[in-house]
Picture 1 (cartoon, rainbow over the protein chains, first blue to last red):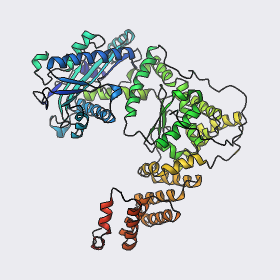
Picture 2 (tube, each protein chain N blue to C red; picture 1 turned 90 degrees about the vertical axis):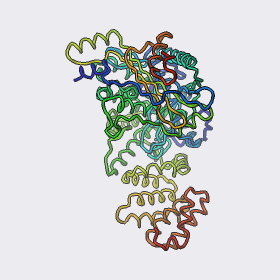
Picture 3 (tube, helix red, strand yellow; picture 1 turned 180 degrees about the vertical axis):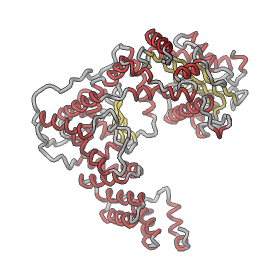
Picture 4 (cartoon, helix red, strand yellow; picture 1 turned 90 degrees about the horizontal axis):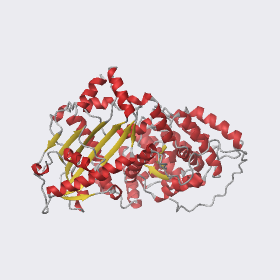
Length: 229
Length: 394
């Protein structure tokens, strides 16, 4: 049973990992203006016992590298990026971040995951609601961009354990990487683009790896995507 | 938080302080910053993020008076650790408090309505500070790392559902796994009691607070399986109270006064009673709410306020005879004076249903006089128009 789960996770058994509702970013001004919510990136160390332990140094390095890589990507795309930082969020921005986390998890489970909602018929019509325009108004932003990423790095001991358990027909996680990026239209609140990534998307703890990871995260992003590739 | 002006308390306590060291020593000094250990730095980073989210939470109580009361008490109990503890008062009618390893403490508003004195509230706070000074979260994390039993903690059920690990579950799952052990709870109990005594508060409150909760539980119509201090890692409340009582009496002598009434605590409740009890009534746990109201009357909370909430309880319960009980309670509250404006309105609605139109109208008018900016003014004015009442549109 667990072995099945493991193979499902590792082989990406959900076939779709991307939803693109729009071809281009629409802008009220000259360039589309995108609000980058503080990327929720965390690195964990998984020791032999299997308890993921938050790792401050790796997490801080990854967050900073990811922000730099996204800035670069946005500049390449001709998009004005407004970067928000954790400590400067207004209560409304915090609440929408929390709401997005809940909606994003629901999208993962019920759109990309195996638990389909029968009434949805695979429609992708997830929204945070039009009230979200309040967080874009004073920044003249058209869209908000959310990034979620987790990297669980297994220690040698943990990997050895995972091999042993697998040999015995069981499953023990030997680390994992997963995340998603999502673009929300600040006028309607609708999620207009959503991309899921998993294992092997890039090593965010170094600058080069973070660029690779950000490119995977932004696959088929709705701005002249050929320019990004 | 440190700007709280200390009310001068005539401390009637003459605690016979028994010589001896603190039962369990703090593991960290005041002003503690996490050591260079990777696991501890990681924990602090993680909870710092949670604390940031807490600051923006819609459930955070911003009322300055309530925050001063609770944070001031926390500072007094914490003593030298005052600068390390940050209190977040959370709007939730349940009884709960929790401590993060970086000194951020959450206290639910239901804790204020269930404690009978500042000493009892301080007992809850002292217990949480005990978790902090003993590095209990870190200790628990390290114990779990050592035990292989945690190996399957990743939620495989969720993995099945999503095809990938559900990311947002990670953090909460980790914190759940870090629920304190029974040994840690007992340790924190003793530290809390000693901190009460050191702060000139009554250490006997450390066990009396549990006895109050046991009384509420006994009055409950549906016994609880709720998160909070009764959760599975916490020793049984009665056993816990007994152990603490024995320890406190041995160390500090028997209680030498009746701890009630505590004017400071009762005054705080009077100033915020509507805000605090509104959520409790809305839980629809009528047995518990009734027990709390009875307790509040005995404590000396303004009877006009308490009777008003008896009215709310009966009106919301709506069992046979409850309409009459609610009318009596609202009337009683109004006679006692200091009833909230909504006592007139809610009484008016009940009288409307009983076809006592003149009385209903009188009370509606009174309501609008007392609260001219009421959000439901238009609705009340509609009912005040003579014909709308007599057309039987109610």
